[in-house]
Each structure stands twice: as C-alpha cells, then as structure tokens.
Image 1 (cartoon, rainbow, N blue to C red):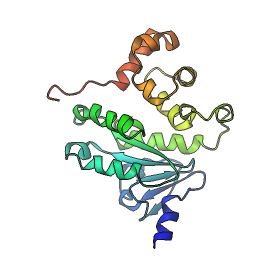
Image 2: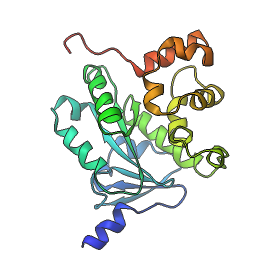
Image 3: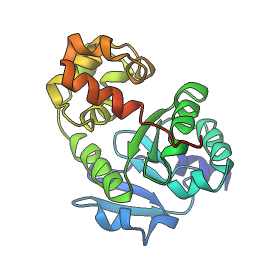
Length: 215
C-alpha cells in the first residue's frame, strides 16, 4: 500500500494530460479544461493536480480561507509531502477572500517557500492549467541557460497573467529579479526602469492587492 501511494505521489502524466484528485470530478474547473485529457486518481495525497512538467497544484478556495486556518495545516502537509514535483499553490483572490489574501500570500511565499498563483476562480484556474500543459510541449530555451526558478514556465505563466505584461516584459522582469519573493515585493520604483511606469503600477497592484478594511 505504501509503495503504491509513493508511486502515485510522484506520478507524471503524459503530455496533454492532467492527473486530478477524484474529488474534482464534477467541478467547474474540470469542465472548463479545454484540450486536456483528465486522469482521476484517489491517492494523490494532499495535491489536487499533477501536470506533465513535473509540477503539482494545491488549490485554496475562498471557502477554505473564510472557514478558518485549517487550510494552513493542509499547506504545511503539502510542503512536507516528499513529492519530487515543483509544488504550486493556486489561491482564489475574490471580493470575499481579498481580506485574507495578503496573509495567505505571505504564508505561502515566505513561511513555506512555495510558488503562489492568484486566480479569480476555477474558470481562470482551468485556463492557467491548460496554458501550462500545452506550453510544456514547446521548446524552452531558457532552461538551458539557467536553472533559476524564475525562468520555469510556471513562473513565466504567472508573470504573464499580470495585466499589461506580455512575454517580453515578463522575461525582462525574470532576468532582473533572482527570486519570486523579490519580484512580489519589488517597489514600483524598482519595476519602472524595467517595464515602464504604467506596467510597474499594474504589477505592484497585482501582487499587493488591498486587504479588507476589517483586517
């Protein structure tokens, strides 16, 4: 049983496929995935999805955040799972969850050292997963030049989610900042020489969305 569990925890789906936890079978996220084949599995451990580029995803919904701190224990188990995958966290940043988002972001990035991708909901999450799955089949010249985490296609996809930031600006940012934490915490003055004033404002706002008045 332990051998099977270990195999599943490190199972890499073939190109064009996603391994999804059985609990997601009837979700809108799964229904929104386009051009991706789904393999359902009961024993993925804490992870919700495995992607063909050896990354896995844990999804934190607005309901998880509003319900209390149990999601933090789940995140810690995720970080400590022993998976050989790059561990990615998708967090819903909505009107209901925005007052919690800053604390979750700090916990994921600084306390656990994981990569966080903010999404507006399951539909946007499915689009991001689809983008990552299909991009994995293309040649990625940046991996030959450096093993930096920031030039991983997952993080490149994150930066390109920022309004006003395309591939060229994303690459410029990733060549300048040596860690995802540095990029998330960069001041507007640090960003402006790289992407210009307007984009600097958009990037800063994206990573520092205001919390609710009661937080």
